[in-house]
Length: 200
Length: 340
Image (cartoon, rainbow over the protein chains, first blue to last red):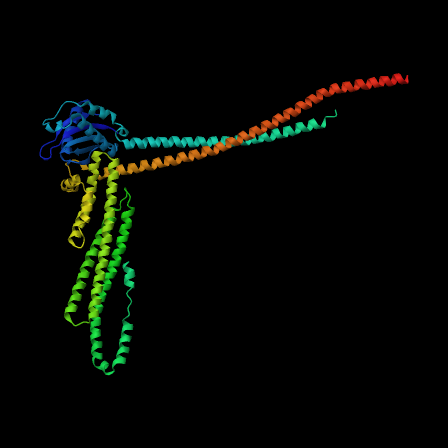
């Protein structure tokens, strides 16, 4: 479950021109050293193509060999994510939502005037790349589901231990009733011996 | 409603005929013979035309009744629709069916009206027959209007339901996905506008159906309907790549996940209550144990006291014995001294 790259692009309405890269964060450590630059170029190219073909206000997932590219175009600002097949789609889109919100919070509307690819790295994106390797971080629903499942397991264990406690209490009840019966016999015997040997 | 009114028509033509024959007998015998045969023949031909009219009327009445039933089914479906498993296809099919039925019935009623007008203009029918035919027409028209009103009500409830669902979706999803759900709605709503347009075209219905749909569409939706309904229907086929499922799956998967979370939470609630009841039961057991222990403590203490008393008795008895033996020996000594 790995995210390979996160991209933010600016998509122009007219589908003639290529989208412009606004931010780029990629993790190509899985490739060999010599293939890394090639992989980065590939990511850029594929990202531009997919962003060009994503109409505004639409989400899209494209499968490419063993990678999935998820893209979300919101009012001309497009976010893409390259991830493998195991990453749940929903978490991917919520991640893209978050990235877009963060970008708009940080840069406001300045991205609309950008005409060339920006090469400055955006630290938030890099952090996001590492943080969101685990899909539960990105998707709150998934996290909630996971927490609830853990809680359910803990509760099952609790119920099991409560049942064991019930059994022990049962045996305690039996033993205490035996004890009280025995002590009653003891008392009667003592009274009997007391009564009979008065003359002696 | 229509069935009862259909069955409330009682056919009393036989009674009428017997009554008229009796009256004729009373008035004049010869008056019967002449026009009698003609009248029979004309009544026969009139009967044909009348039965044609009646057949049409009865068919229309039957159609109205069936449409009423369908509308009630649709109303049931629209009322029970939950947020997640909307029987959208069924509802829309049923709506289209009902609309077709209503338009057909409308056409049939207007047909019957023209037929009756022709008949009235044609031959000299009795005034009663004209009145009868006009009352039938009016009655059917009123029934049809009633059913269309019902249909309209059902549609308004359905759109209100959909609006409520939209609002709930807005509460639980963020800004961007709100636009997405509007898009999702645009899929469903592009179907209603075609039929609502034809509904307006049929003329009988006031255009209140359109505004209820319009309320549901916000401005964003209208713009997106123009922009997106066509792109969502184009599936991009890119060169090397194979397009994954459409974005409706996003909202659907989110709704499924929400359902799961909801059911898990309720399960957890049930587990907690079970746990509480079990612990309460075991509390009772603990109280029983406590009581038993108290009882045995009391018994043991009583037995201890008895044994202590026994002990003191035994130990004190020795003293008593010594004392008694001493006194006996004293008495023996005294007796021995007396004898000696």
